[in-house]
Image 1 (cartoon, helix red, strand yellow):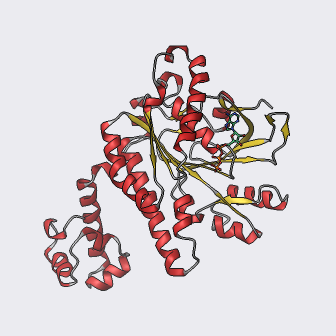
Image 2 (cartoon, protein in one colour):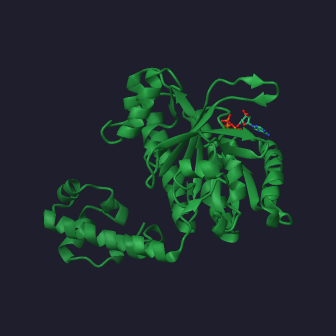
Image 3 (cartoon, helix red, strand yellow):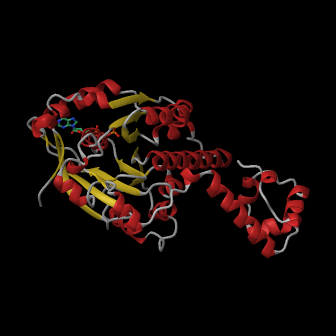
Length: 360
Ligand SMILES: Nc1ncnc2c1ncn2[C@@H]1O[C@H](COP(=O)(O)OP(=O)(O)OP(=O)(O)O)[C@@H](O)[C@H]1O
């Protein structure tokens, strides 16, 4: 973080900072105005001036963190806003597809179809912008260690994808998907902080998928000890901030697959959602699910993580019924929250080609 001694300040403010041994911009910016006023023995007017100077310094020295934009600039830039899922019905349910920036969470119970949706996006992202793609490859960070299964399933999808998009028949779509396995939290940290930024700066990658974000956290932070919970929150915060930074810097969407936790009482919902009035939609959804005893599950990692993501897509499935060889379970996809569309849902199914929406 920037050192204060290099910043031009009024002498009495500079003197107060020196006396209080405040050396960096973060020493100031991590404190409230009241705290600064007390510690530095400065008037509230001086504190306001100091905070403004520090904020200016951050904007000046870290322009990538503040890529200010407005609606007109976005419109004129012609930047693709949505990444298609490859299925018109699902795109419609999701308000156009997956947001082409920020963090989108895909959450659901085991075998709900999260990985299938992600693999499909690995293919659609390679399409031209005209067709709803982002013209680039994918980095697929997997915590499950099942890369061979992913590759095999992707090959299956590619086969039918090429039949639908004849012009891709000579393109090697699997070359544009780079799989990385992260078996533990330490490796995950190394990959996201060191390896991923290098990969993104050297290749034309337009999508990052982390499948799943909860797996390693659940293993390391399984205790309910308060100090461990605090550390978990801190690490989750760091992870969310890093992902946002990467998404902003490389202008690409990051998809985080998340698991679910069981809901044991309706008070769990309040604990998960926080203030009901702040997020009435989600509160209402889980409350109803709980009351009808259906899908009484909430996304893992709690409220803190919920505040780090930009949109949330929930996949769910009813109990599996096999008719002959056909998997006939009812699946639903719900856009739980997004800055660009209201909550909506629909049914979908999975077949050899990938995932498809059902016409009602
Ligand atoms: N080739 C295929 N043809 C038809 N359906 C398939 C095919 N491959 C997978 N599926 C369906 O996809 C489901 C698994 O989906 P997926 O692997 O995306 O689950 P998930 O939500 O990622 O689960 P987990 O959290 O356990 O990894 C299976 O139950 C199966 O019904």
